[in-house]
Structures are given as structure tokens and as C-alpha cells.
Image (tube, rainbow over all chains, first blue to last red):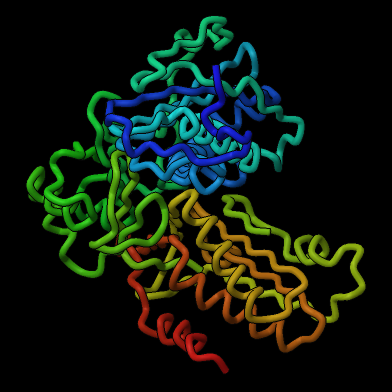
Length: 282
Length: 151
């Protein structure tokens, strides 16, 4: 057994993966953040001061997975084909379990990406909830499974994971919708979430655009995009539903993973893309 | 400090929180925006503010970071309310502290101009003649452009 990140002189180095064959790689990791039961209840209801905690933590985890190579010195930059973050509420243990799945076809494993996604999602949960609970504790971050690659498959044996199967799986659909407060005409239709088996882009239409198009949220299979960018997504949306022709009427802005974007912005599976009218706050 | 919340805020308490225990602050400018009973149409009875959780907070943080890079500030608080509000209700608060007044006045003005054109909030007004979404105003964009050329 040798450490591949050390060379013959025991110095740290980046492994040359150029000669390794490409294969389908997947890794799942999980962690837990313990909190007071009142905090957990607030989180479930969406009543925390910083807003939709789970949606934000999910995006944070996805972004972190993509940037793992910037954080971990000897990690390669990877073109992940999928990053998924899920949450299990466990009221009995008064904690929230965070699960991350990363996938790509390539020459290196994605364990570090999955572990980084869990870690940063947990840190974001702490940040979002610390105003009401500073005693939260993050723990049990570990690799659950990995498949593909020369070292073969791995599944954690002494599985200390929570009995998550019995806890309800919660996602954006279970928490409060984007609309805050009452807007009688502001019906939000929350579409189905991305299916693990089918890589897709999650699309949200906000405010006036949502009401004008009559669509709040929709998942678009990634393989429907003629090009892997926002322009390709718009084409796919119009092909799926003619109501999306309305994206070309008036000024419609776009954000990818909550950062302002344009037609040329590249997309990867599981990205969140929001379309919305010009802002009118203040 | 940045908060997006449904609850009302206390201007005095927020200023106190920003300046507590400090003697290096020589100027505090606060701006409070209120809901008017007239806008594009008369008789506004209420408005509903929608936002994009997550992006809202990061957009506000970016604006505050930009202000802090332009002026020597000693503290900034931005609170924006969401949900249903009625005329007279406070809707947004910006508190800026600095050693001297000019930086605080200018930074507060800058933050509001950028907030109105860059932070993902949308207003829907409920009037006697029905509900409508507020449209963007050219004047807001002109105001924001004032800050693009360094003075």
C-alpha cells in the first residue's frame, strides 16, 4: 500500500493521470449537522432569518464540488457530469444529514469532490442557522461509496449512517417556495426534482415572468440541450413548451447557480438556472 | 450585516448595534425606505415583495463589498423586508458608518442605487384596480450609472 500523492523522495506531487483509461466514476459521501430541535423545526418550516436554508446549502455544495481543485492542493480540476445534494431531517436525533453524489467519466475519482460538497454544505447550514443556534456541531463526514477506477469499488462497511430511509427526504419542494408572503395571483408550480438517473438542469421562473409564462419550476433533461449553455437551454425549453417563447419578450434576466449569467454561460448537469424580470426592490 | 426578513426593523437598534463600543466612528448615515400609497397607479393598498433566496443575500453582500472598496467605511448594515407590506411600512434600511460624513453619505446613496438595480427583489402592488408587477424605472438605472465613472 503506497500513498500516490508522494513521489519516491516522499515529496508531495500531483499524480499524472494522462495514461489512465477513462471510466465512469461515482462517489457518495455524507455528513451530519446536529442542532437544537427548535432550530431544526425552523429550518424545516423555512423560518430562518437568512431565508431558504436548504436551497442555499444545496447550491453551496454543488459549487464547492466544482471548485475542489482550488481547495485541495493535489486534486485535479474535473468536469463533473453530475453533483447532487440531498438532505434528510432526523427529528429523533435532532440533526440534518447531508448526502452528496458526484459523477463523471474520466481518469480520476470523485471522492474528494463528494466530501468537499458535504463539508461546504454543512458549513453553509451552520452559517445560515448560526443566528439562532451557535451550538450546532458538524460531524461524521465520510465517504459512503465509490465506483469505477483502478482501485475498484468501495462501500463503507461499519455504516454509522442514520436511519435515513425512514426519515422523509426533503428538498426544495418540501420547503417554502421562492415567493415570500402572500401573492394571491402568485401561484407557484413546483415541478419534480431532478432524477438521479437522468441528469438535468433545474429551471426557475421568478416573479412576473412566472405568472406571465404560467411556469414556476421545471426540470430539463440535460441531453435535450443542443448546446451546453444558456442559449441551448432556452432552445430546449421552447421545444418542450411553447410558453417559453415568452423568454424572448421584454427584458428577461438570467442567473446560473444564483450568479448573473448570459446566453453564452456554460451549463453542467444539476445547475440551477433562474429566469426573471428586471429587479424592482428598495 | 445583511438581513432579508419579513419582520419590521428598529432603526435605532440597528444603528446602536453598528456603533456599540466604538469611538472611531464619526458619522452614521441611515436611509429608510417606506411603502408609498401611490406609485405607477394610485391607491396602493399593499405590496408583496418576492426575492430569490440565496442570490439575494449574495447580491447584497457584493454591493456592500463594492461600497467598502470605494469608501473608508467602519460598518454597514442592510436590511430588506420581503412578504406583504402596507403603505407606511418600512421596507429597506441601510446604515453606513465612517470616520467622516462624506464617505457615509456617498456610500449610503451608492448602496441604495445599486440595490434598486442589482438585488433580486420584485414588487407586486395591490391597488383598488387590481394587482400588477412594478416595472423597472429608467431613472433608477441612470442613478446607478452615476457611480460607474470614478469621481
